Image 1: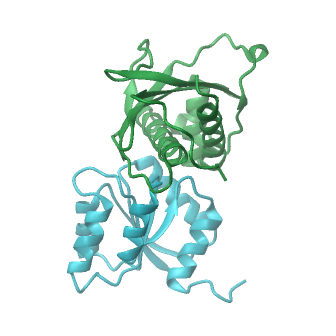
Image 2: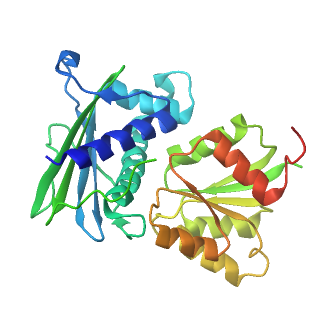
Length: 163
Length: 129
């Protein structure tokens, strides 16, 4: 795994969840081990100076909290399954949009595809020829958030400092 | 002065979030219209008096940059201020949008950033605090 890229992803996800859904993430520690593994996932492919796939899986409670907070409603009953999927897609879209310039440089132009929901039981995997370069696990009050980054070809250098 | 605002984003959750955020930060809101892509956005502009367009970039059917290009071809709507709220991180693309007259906010955003940008383009709120 690439430690620099792990750090970039951790920082971007932490900042995104905080600003987007008022949720606070911290690095996952073994003692945080919960019985429930993340089961709801989404992935997004991108291409540009390098191409690849970013995947994210969250526990059910984390997903509900993201959707509830993004929509600003009082309880989960007001959130539909479509709202949850939409919230998850938007979240990974924002994360990917912030990770790529941090790795590839601010002037690099990337095209990000529409995010796709990962079906229950399906693993987070990259496309043909893509190799795993980063695997990040974060803890939140509501559960866990796992991210993986697959890249096709050379592992890129981290070029930008995250503000 | 209450502002009529058009929010164009393919994510219904993001549209709701932007509208909620604008309400939270004290912007005087008039009518709020929504569209899921640039084509629908242009249709709304044809039917309603809109003071500001809040626009995503990556959308199906017609993306945000294409919508800005279409707006600039139409004298009746070319001067409506456009604020792009997007995940776009490329300074190359952001500069291109700014050259077309759009202001830019990167997701994720805070309520204050949206408020300040709307005040900046409309002058509404100046001297109110």
